[in-house]
Amino acid sequence: QSALTQPASVSGSPGQSITISCTGTSSDIGRYNYVSWFQQHPGKVPKVMISDVSNRPSGVSSRFSGSKSGNTASLTISGVQAEDEADYYCNSFTTSGTWVFGGGTKLTVL
Amino acid sequence: EVQLVESGGGLVQPGGSLRLSCAASGFTFSIYWMHWVRQVPGKGLVWVSRLNGDGRTTDYADSVKGRFTMSRDDAKKIVYLQMNSLRVEDTAVYYCVRDRPDWKWGQGTLVTVSS
Image (cartoon, rainbow over all chains, first blue to last red; front, side):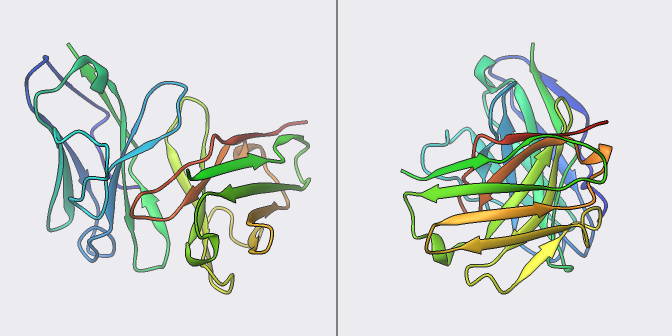
């Protein structure tokens, strides 16, 4: 049950697009379309931004989008804003019947 | 409105036990898988366990397997996490989470394992 691999940090200027990757294996991301992305501001509860690879829950800004290719999933924020500065986590279902999270990525808006 | 309220956290000595509860409201409780996820303050999210709607299927992270047991009471709409043989490394905020697709989270309860 190794954690999914995410970059520790990414940054971007307001208005730019940024992408956060999440790399797993053929036993998790590569096997199922059950990848979600969560945003967590300091001291707050995580909030789902993308579910099932690319579905955006009601109320989530259309600037957030998700995709998957092989064993790697990606979260893209188009036109990043100051309020997007937070930690982002991916997760995936696995062939063991368990779920696994990525280590998290800190997004800094310059 | 979906609400998940955890309780039962606190300070416990290594080797001790604790039972967390998660009271659910605002949705049809019995049809959802429920999860526990933990987070050491300042660190990342770690999936702990899940339980299906009829309470018959559970899965656990290797780090807690054999020590933690998840259960549910559909009449009371409560999910439990019985934690035995606690270790210092189990110290974390424990979140109760409703399953995909919209992953609803409780506010969390802090468990501290220390002598």
